[in-house]
View 1 (cartoon, rainbow, N blue to C red):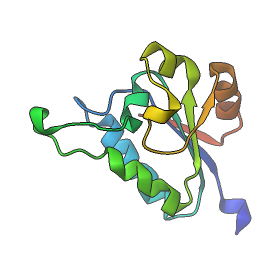
View 2: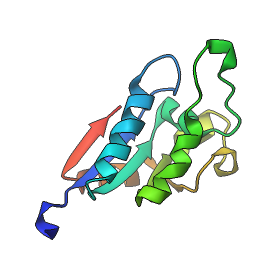
View 3: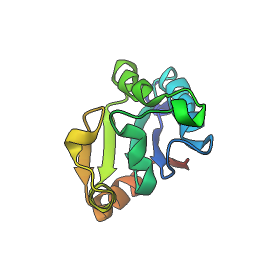
Length: 122
């Protein structure tokens, strides 16, 4: 059975609101987690905003889904990586995020991407 397990990284690059990419990506991650794949998620660029605490979505008439990222741990999706430069450029720190992450430099995220069987960009 182990030979059927794939290493799959989801890369969140877009802001969480204004498009469906982040929301649909999160749903895809949850579905794939049910199939017990080796999943990881990297947040790069505006994708880091998906994890920001205190998101208010009432003004844009969208239901907030950021807290759903907190459920990933329950699905054994524990490899969450955030690009250090992306955080810095947006004035965010690890303490601004909803979930525990590993903050890595871009080169290390790139190395981890290269270790995957599949990389899916959202």
